[in-house]
Length: 143
Image (tube, rainbow, N blue to C red; front, side, top):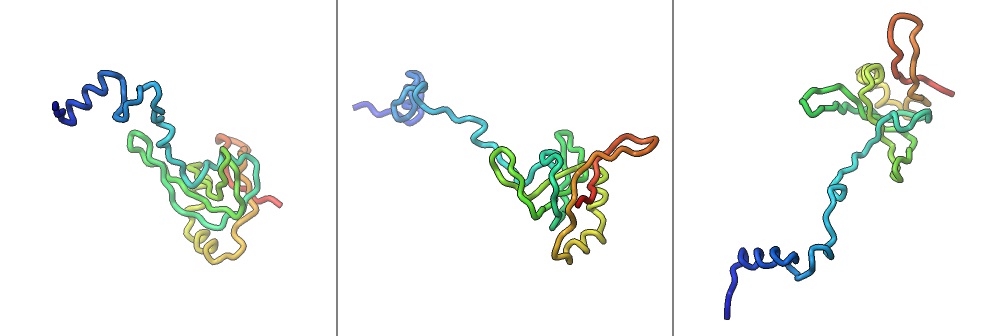
């Protein structure tokens, strides 16, 4: 009787194009990178386009790029849910400067935490200043 070490057995199996159960590699379901993608609990505020929403909570959620550069950001919890890619979300994230500056205001956060009705209804709109600066996105109240 010939006994093979696990390493030798592995070499023989791989040389014949089989997995450890004897199935041919072509028959084995391959693992895909997409199987390991994680989904966050929020979507970009840009994804909801012109939808109305009411803010019920705000938390800091800064973005760090591949170079280690940190951009201030916020995560907004809303009363409403939005469907994107077949999933429902009630949290939005953004690094839009005007929105982040407004929602990092300590008084606004204190008042929001004490509020039963939240802040809104709001929309994210492109604001066109009268003169001198570029258009920017900000939150505006709507009826």
